[in-house]
Length: 123
Image (cartoon, rainbow, N blue to C red; front, side, top):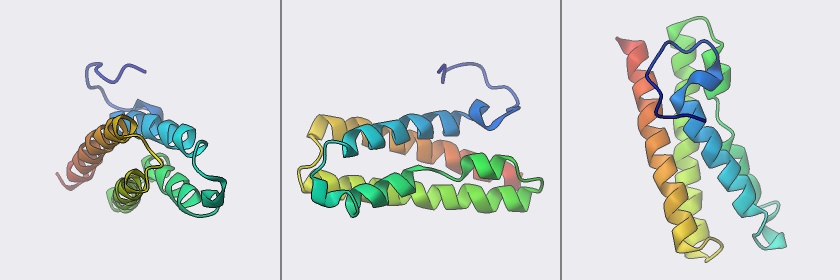
């Protein structure tokens, strides 16, 4: 996954840099939550996994800017939910600080990229 490549028009949702970072974060979430206490399988682990699976792909396929924007905005909100749940997981000591920081950094970059996608629809 080359996230530093020159910007070109996205032909498929996997071309979106925001999707690439978000996907990497989602994989981190799934890997990390596998190690959490079993009593969290239907609690925090389930919530963060659902929130991590973004609406960017679905939004990409929409034909109008308004419709795309709605799904990108939902993805933005879901990502904010992931950020909050990561803080809870860190505070409960389910995630080592270094792992938390790496995931939090990916979330920040993804958040900025989604913000850019939303703004591009308004131009």
